Picture 1: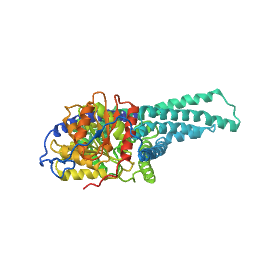
Picture 2: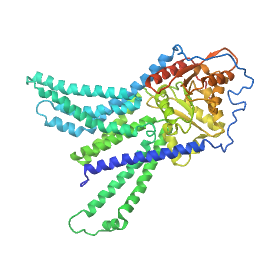
Picture 3: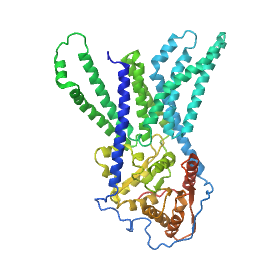
Picture 4: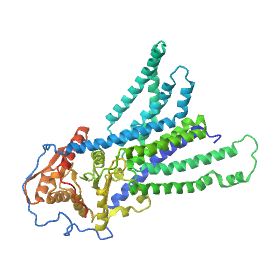
Length: 565
């Protein structure tokens, strides 16, 4: 590894991250267009007739019943609090597992400078100096933990502020205590330790913060790990070829002609890159296929994969920082740190039985199409949080295509098999419904079950989903008579008598009178029913919190889910 500079490694890694961002953006743009184009076509398998007797909810003899609409909050259901507590327990276990795993891994990643600081200390503060190296690296991972828990911006920075205050306080209190025990005089210089700690924290936190901010955006993060694997592999090939040519031709004396030199001159750097990129690209592609197979087998969740990729990038950047201690030592520390994280986080999740929960209450998300940014904010604030409680089901659309894409769907699109993910007939629909019964992933998080539908299968798919999900969230902001799809969905909700488990979101543009007439006109005969309306003129955190509470109440007030089939 002689001749390789840490700056070369840093440049290669930075280039790989930047190129990955660009490739991911282009990939998602093409994917969204493909989804929008395919959902307007009809199934080659003949579709599903939603008017057939097998389709639940189609009961021509039903008569409308008295309908009561209310925008007042419903009284808390008895089981709402346990559901919320279960979600908080899952998030707490995730936080513990990743916090401990990152701490152990950070100690290995920065073992050389920590040992050096301890060994050179002659004033009894070696442990403190080693701690100053470790604590900022560990606490900087709070940005990753916050992203895994879907914490808000204020909560994230509050946790970071507490970590900074704790570290700064310890950097003053520990040496003060040592001096008091040893009888050494105190000095105002001890206060400067807090300043030095803040500088170290800022330097170590910069990379995780920028990495999470740039690659952890909702529209990018589900595909980013796969792209990073492929692009980083090719980036390393380019860097290796550059280094080989520098070693061959950078000498000051006459160049001795050898067979290797003649072959390199004949092929040229571009040809050599292409020759090496083929096997490297093939291995990376096979790696993505293996990851997809493990994801399909529910060996990890999408957020686990993202955290693995983030920590892998941070460990790789650690190689550049440790290069001064020797290339092999730097690679060994980075590899050992990532392996320690990978094993320990999964062991801790298993010890806490985080992923042992059976199927939780499922949430069906319905919405008015055509409002991508608003729908994505609702998805992030509600559906992403619900995954700690139960699975989320929805009929896929272009508005949430790039937000909810998973590893399996990304690879299917890359293979040109996007239509294989679509519901084309009843058999395919029944297979997809089985996902709503699956248990949580190893990190306790349930999955988003997207039902990609053709124009002649989405109505029947909706009817089956209404029967096999516990809670229905319908975003009716901007709803009016032009939204024929939403009118059909409201009719089916009324026919099934499902209004007690529904939560409707409205704003000033919602034609609530039309919605109420549609629900009442399709309602089954029986007693009067009422609905839960949440007025949300703005996508603020208070409104989202009220919406999540209403969903917990709706889930707690329903009977256990019916089995599929």
